[in-house]
Length: 403
Image (cartoon, rainbow, N blue to C red; front, top):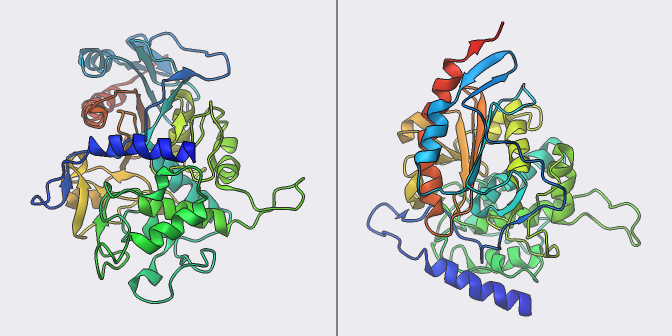
């Protein structure tokens, strides 16, 4: 109970810092993402770091020379991001196209991701679909046996819970059991099911509204855990894998992500991890995920994974930094206007502390702003990302072959 109570108090303070929502402006929120209960002090991973030297202004990778002078100058000029690690890569070259440490922020620094965790949830759902364990069209019942068989809530499917269209995100500021680590995912999903739907917005059908918040993704995690049919070997009695084991099986182990967990790795795995905002990772690990996304073999159906799922829907709560963007499965679809999201191939997942990773399947690169900023990081990370995108495109377009 002590752990749970501490998380609630810390979370209340975090939520209080975000409580400025403009109800008269289309439901657009002031803040981009929910803060985790508390930002743990960053620490190095257990393995000896192999931090690359700051990138030179020109790199030679894969037979091409890239000039990163303008990109590095823009990063250095941004005084609101004093410390960070910045990576640009592609799907074919094992070396980074660009890697730069600004200030003090090593490539193996373990960092809280906040809402950048959501892309992990989408990836796990897609990987389990590829394995034939789930489908995106799955209803919540029978794996979640408490699920109602009446009303619009009965029609919630896995695709809704991962795309902010489930009906459970009436407000990201409404408290929830996702902040109680000592619960179980199953019981947390039941609490959300019982309290966070029609009682807040009567008649809200799944797929009918776009509302950004943590509750649907928590339900998705409980469903994935309950749906798993693989048996953990060597246990007596045999049991199904828990959420952390599934994440390792389907995501981190295949990619060699050794410093990524859905909790502070210095502690123990909670039975009820905060799936929408509680993961930790390192720049090196997260870059492996982004590279895998771009490559197209880790997630074999990238169209399904990255396509917009909120176009034309009423926007109940939408982050101010993503007013024109749509939402996919755990990531935003970036575009200048909502109509442009239909053809956009840029997906991103920003976090409250500024951590922002994205892939650009048109230009053919992935990039990461890895940082930890206590206040306003969501705005700062996204603003720097937008500046970097044009400069990265220019550097790639103007690369020159090396004889």
